[in-house]
Length: 369
Image 1 (cartoon, rainbow, N blue to C red):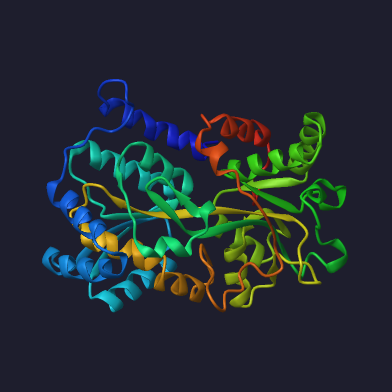
Image 2: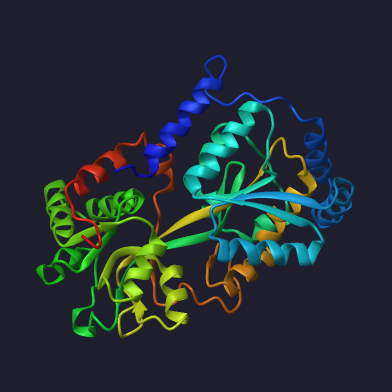
């Protein structure tokens, strides 16, 4: 099995092949146009920055290249909403977060950046930042984001919240889970599905248990029991399709927005117990937005970054996602008990959690077998 950081490690080989000296960052030629554009905008008072970015974007040809791991049913309306507001056409490259990172790195090494702005998972955004590919942003929209959502050269734009999900036709209220530990109960034997790349969930739950006073032996026993109850599958959207169709009763973890969107379409699925309030610690993983330092359309990149943290947040709410800022009418976090997501620990991980999760799942049956 290949999990998330394994793919990132392969991307790291691309970086190593193009580095010079001991700095470890991708070496790219300076782009005077992008540098100058970003500097012009940054130097202005914050209430004048949007107007200047709009003026400069017109000179760029009113176009923008976005690389994102948003699914097509989200990326398309987001691009359309931005284009409607600013008249800037958005060309979207969509792939999983690892693919987005690899493409951006390869293009940077070739000196031909294809992206102007990137919106993807925190781990890949951190890698882009660490490799000096992202430009600084100082727009007033940052004031809307809490300190925990601000990172070096990128900002959280939305949150993927981890919770179990179940089919309400197959899991009745008396059998609903009320803790991560519950997933190890014998009554869930053969009813759980695990996703093969969820090592970040595995890491967060493990550290949470240890922080709450469990011993490593107790944690290992819980995970062994959870896997014994489970089959494995690939892809959170695919898992939700199985869950909605009743082909699997429960998912050990899925993103709450995927569950909520399926429920809104009439699927008998939920991540909240009958009472409407979950006591299961909910880890909110950030996805973020950043501007490519050598962008061909830097003013457009600046506008998109700023828009995604302001009016774009409202569009995310309309699409059922969890915004990184407080948006009137957002109900995506209702009933959840949020706990911190370990961004720092996973950003510095060398792939050890992938290896542990891979080893844990080894030999587990796959969904449909």
